[in-house]
Amino acid sequence: MTNHPSRGDRPVEPLVFEKHVAGAYGVDFPPLDVPETPVPHRVAGSGVPLPSIGQHDVMAHYTHLSDRNFSVDGNFYPLGSCTMKHNPRINEWAASLPGFSCLHPLQDEDCIQGALRLLYETRTMLEEISGLHEVSLQPAAGAHGEFTALKVIRAFFTDHGQPQRTVVLAPDTAHGTNPASCTMCGASVKQVRTIDGHTDLEHLQEVIAEVGPENVAAFMITNPSTAGLFDPSIKEMAEIVHGAGAKVYLDGANMNALLGRVKPGDFGADAMHYNTHKTFSTPHGGGGPGSGPIAVTEELAPYLPVPQVMMADDGSFYLDRDREKSIGKVRSFFGQFGVLVRCWTYISACGPEGLRHVAETAVLNANYLAVRLQEVYDMPYFAPEKGAFCAHEFVSVPQTLLDKGVTLIDIAKRMIDYGVHPPTMHWPIHDCLMVEPTETESKHALDQFVDVMLQIANEIDQEIACVKNAPLVSDIARADEVGAARKPVLVWND
Ligand SMILES: *Cc1c(COP(=O)(O)O)cnc(C)c1O
Image 1 (tube, helix red, strand yellow):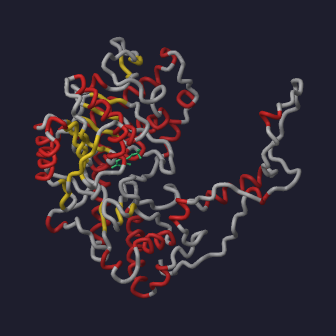
Image 2 (cartoon, helix red, strand yellow; image 1 turned 90 degrees about the vertical axis):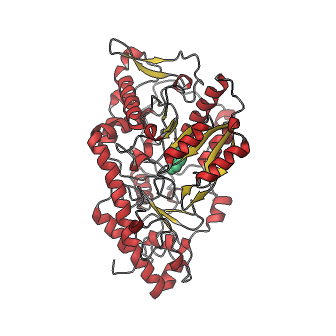
Image 3 (cartoon, protein in one colour; image 1 turned 180 degrees about the vertical axis):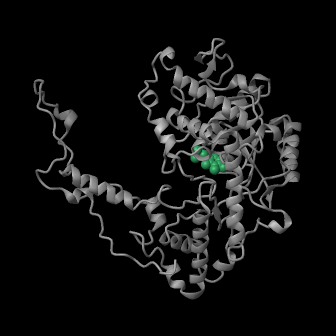
């Protein structure tokens, strides 16, 4: 860490089109053994100008490009709230077993007993972890889980003669998917104020009174909150919400801090979703695959989506498609099967003790980093001397550094130079760094991260230009992010 990175001279990788060599080819097709039939012009058009390129050149091209990617396999990825943790390779082994990966979703149930058993066991393991009555594995991501559970809650109220319960309350720090899912579900959202990262109970009561308790469907809460704090007044909140006749919805995207320690059902949640791709380790991001099972109480269970995987009295497994009060289907076939195999594998490999250890280590790692960084990186919510430890993540608002003339983006871009993915920024506070190390980082990796962060702080004092102009060693210099988002150039023109 003593040598300052500077822009290297790695050659620019040409576009694959620029590697075109007339007459080159990468595959050999077997000789034609059927009569040649021309493809009609209206189907084939005038052809696509694809490059001709040899097999090895194509491999080298994409390998070079992949080398330039940031990846959870190659770099520290402390993206708060996203839980970018190591994906143990046994997960991949299990998911690629032909008995799982080659299944057809329309196969008869008697020849997919193993797959159904895996789904059933995943269901029951997630039920146990949640402390709730029944899990549906159908939703395909966290946001989809929120949407599905809200549908279930609304179906419950409609069935109980209270269709007017269409207001959902959420703290002002809620994840963006929370209000979006409410809107998709035809509910309206009312914000509840937070103070120092915790929900303001008085304001919660005021908002309920304002909209009328009889109109409230649910209160959506993330705990530990997006500020990385476990809210100890969660039981009181649940009492207030239940007192209004409404349901408590837990956004359980980040269960890392709770696994095996606290069951959401015990602190008053009526429904929750998991993000198995976060908590139970599947590589995600960039639109990668996810899975968002939901868990609900017994009174909400009849409304869960179909099909539900069940175990018969003789120990065989089947899909129950026949639930009278179900909200219906929310996903084709069994949900995100491949991600659920990884989830089963991760939970089974850890076991109950291992899962508790995951939670302890995730929380310990976050607190270790926060303690080591707090002198230089201001942390509005972290005050261990007052007992305000963080959970699995912490938020820094590095005002002292920003006051020295850098922006948060400058700091984030400099982190790239040191091989660290910038953390989540601008949420839940406008200018902040939300750091989630996860339990899979070693002490060595955490110490390296601290070194990087202190080095950057040092550079701000000593050689501010290398922070202001960062990134200096990445393949591209600082991009015009707004331009890239608003006017992306996605087509290659000769
Ligand atoms: C990631 C996340 C979500 C959304 O999950 P997706 O799988 O991306 O839809 C919702 N809430 C919180 C707190 C999250 O961190």
